[in-house]
Structures are given as C-alpha cells and as structure tokens.
Image (tube, rainbow, N blue to C red):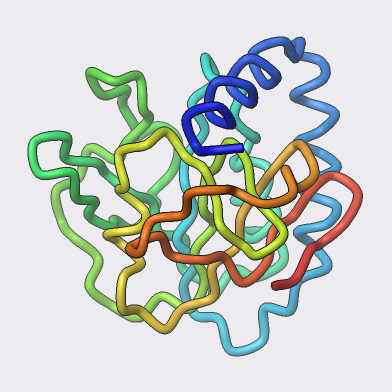
Length: 186
C-alpha cells in the first residue's frame, strides 16, 4: 500500500480505539520501553501525545524516566507550521505546557535546547518491515532527524503494515519500533 492509503486506514483504526484501549496499549508500550538500553543516554527527545488523535500516552514514559533515570534530560518539541520545522525544549513539567492552534501540547518557555540528544521517540501512524514510517504527512520528524546520528525509536499500537510502497528519498528510517508486544529492530 502507499502512504495515503496507509494513513487513511491507520487513522481510522486508531480513532476506533476507546480511551480504555488507548490506556491499556500505552501501558504495554511502557512495559516494552522499559526494556531499552539507556546506557550512554543523556537526553531523550519525546513527543507529547495528542489525546484527540488517540496517540500513545508518552507521559507514562516521561514519568518512568524521571523516576528511574533522573539524570536523563527530557526534551520535547515545538512545531512551527509556517516553516514545517521543530525546535527542542527542556521538559519542565505538564503545568508549563499549552495546546497550540493544532491541539498539540507544547512547552511555553522559549529557550531552545541545543545540547546532545541520543534518542528520539518518534510518533507515527504506521511502520513497515524496513523501518519506514507513515506520520501525518508534514515531514516534521524527517526534517528534524535528517543527517543526525541519533537512535530513532517509533511507538505503535499496531504491528508492521508490511512494506510501504512509496517511501520518499528524504524519509528517515527508524532504528527500532516499540509495539505493545515487542520491540522490532531494523
């Protein structure tokens, strides 16, 4: 299937999940996430969930990291829809987040984090057997990850869609993808 068909199919599939199902699946993702090797990781860039789109609850992972790896910096994005670029910001707690015009939780502080990031938790709608992903189609993460040597970790409620028929030359492949039941390495 091509990206457009996959995007449509997987958006509907995720939308059909109940709040309880999203909660259960998010907790299973956390269980798999805790199995990752965080040795040598000083900062993790992690997306904040859009609840209205039934995205995985990454706040569970943030809380787990803060409890078990308090020295790892949590970095969160802010999207600029004018330029289609993202900036990185140090996570300072849920009370200093606000929803953007696109319903995305973002940090209110303006200071941009410019330090090292060793791991990025990447949002997606679907992934394939080669590590390509289908997102919402704006290319924010592909631009953000381009040329960076960084561990790219996808989060998906569902298993691989097989092969995405039309990956773009600028698509950045994942290193691994966490599903509720396994970690898939590419």
